Image (cartoon, rainbow, N blue to C red):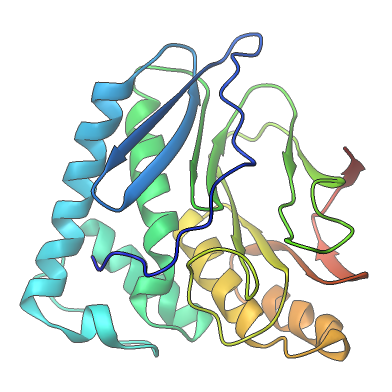
Length: 245
């Protein structure tokens, strides 16, 4: 996977332990994860990152379009489980498979850590895997918008993991063809949430696009909630519960 050309300091990460969670950081090459679990599982997390990256790197080595294409590509019989998830997410979202890469890594690592911790939160560059037994609030990082760090999403416990993924045209290294400060998707499929967040952000060139863009996102099978922000404007649909921070 190519290294990003721009790095946004992740000042929204809080490494203080809170209640039942231990919080730690794990990084392998360009994968930089923030994790909450019931114990510090740094080595296990790094091992899972390497395994996941190995599948993705093998797909890239076999066919360069997996890395380069910005539009959906076809499945290949030689692809492992993680690349297949990324390809399928891209097909639903109208993006290339790499639009789902951060969510796919968070999902793979989160599911692996559930073998050692009953609750896990994994954040990978704004793309989050969540499996909790009590409600949690995820803050919205929206650059210079007045909503930045002032509003959050309340997430209820679910019997299966949840993905909360965000794309931005004004914050961070992710590629976006839009100008949204924040384009967020909630889905039970983390890789899908990531790809659709990219598609949502790409559709927003100004405040007048917000409503139409979140309506598009909600039509993608598997999407539970969609939210987008530009400056002082916000649009949201679906299973979105906003709370003040």
